[in-house]
Length: 238
Image 1 (cartoon, rainbow, N blue to C red):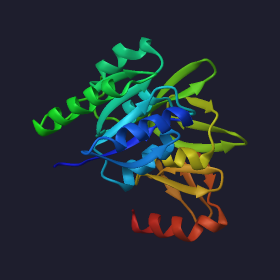
Image 2: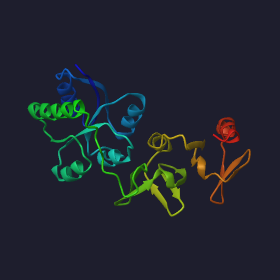
Image 3: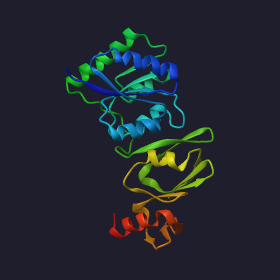
Image 4: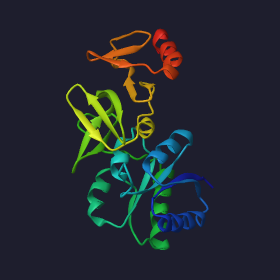
């Protein structure tokens, strides 16, 4: 019997417990992790081969559907939520199924059997891309709005207390994140932490010295504890 590795992305302990119990009752599902937020889930996707995500929509920091849109090659997805108003958006993203809480086991079983049929027929999920297809991005909370930022537009990111400032050529945004958290979201060979307060896009660096890098006519300092690693990578052109 084929086994499908799955993760549960759910911040409500009771809902996570119910889903965990349901998964353990299905012989062809193998639960790899229960994630309380999308950032931890992103780390798990990079560490493990995951075939299926049970994805809640209302997650802290990064919402479920925003997280899904940010993934270039996501696994199969079954959305789990208490809110039916997101059903159309979920199906536009071509999720396998949309489960409304409280989730009954027979409804859960119907959804995972649908997944099994799709997987065994060779039908990989095809997610709707934005007009600029293939560009990794995510949405950030800025005041009452969600602002889309494409990762390849980012010049550098600066930590400002409990916020970060993301700078692109066109704009700056200020959003409530820690720099270590955004490092996880942007886990990408192009981004480099050069200081306790700065992450930069390597391909946007136009010049560098032993103490700073230059991006878009701004000098950004290289921290002492980062100097050896940063200089080694830059001098090798990596």
